Image 1 (tube, one colour):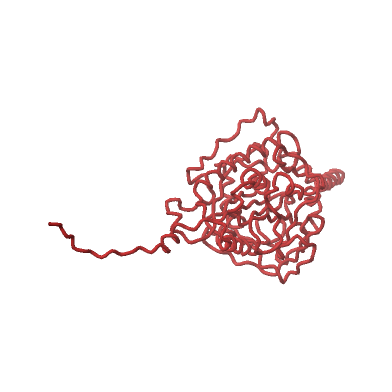
Image 2 (tube, rainbow, N blue to C red):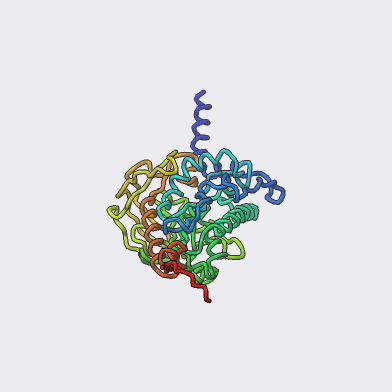
Length: 385
């Protein structure tokens, strides 16, 4: 009996030491992507294909002058059965319960929210650099691209655009910046957020050469990017810097320790100055809230500092803002947003700055307000003899 207990104890120790490898291996779909039958596609003209979408029956020209926000949401699907999540899967409940209040709602004060459901690549597809994984990621991006084209069809030219991507969504947002914002559409961009996915600095001299990193809080037409890690996140920080795939406009390639953009969300610059917790506007651990309910932010939870392309953050004072201790917890999307209030205020500020810039067409409603109609009084008609 003692021998069996000893063996069990040893096995538990081995399982703990190799828990991340075990977690990864059980998420493998077990079939090549080439023979995989993908889930049915979302239809973006239908409301159910969106996690968030405004009432498109309203005349956008009569709405308050704000922006339109497109959000590519983070990963919720670990893998195991599929390479790509069926968008009608029960994981949609997690989207509404955790993803929407933490990763979509912060941007609601900046403008109308558009967040598509899409056949996102499984978490496993970001744990390996196999060709299958690259195909799964590209498959997910094609949904995001179609959704964004629909977004553009319903976003009038006088409304600034806020582009948001968290985690897997940030990878897709990088490609949107390359595919859509290297021309005149850049003039509508208030800000793009690339969060928790590496963005190589060299891209600003290549496939994203029409854009610049944000260096001041009022700058517009620019990109904010950071991946945040505490002192306990060494494994995922290493993976972020070395192994994750980035798309260069043509193909996927490993980040391989290339210099990456780090924007400090407490300072809104890429300097390596330490920002103390007193500058932190607030994090949120929101779960199951109604779409119109604003959670109360927890302020002064963490300081932050950019170092070597990574955003190093203090361990938050509140446990609800920390990474949960569970199998695969290092890789899962957090049920909280440490910089919720900071992002909320920043997006709103940059939209207002873009509206004041004079770069956008004047709103149709404003044009009518400024148009003075001359009133012609009735006059008798004289019939000549």
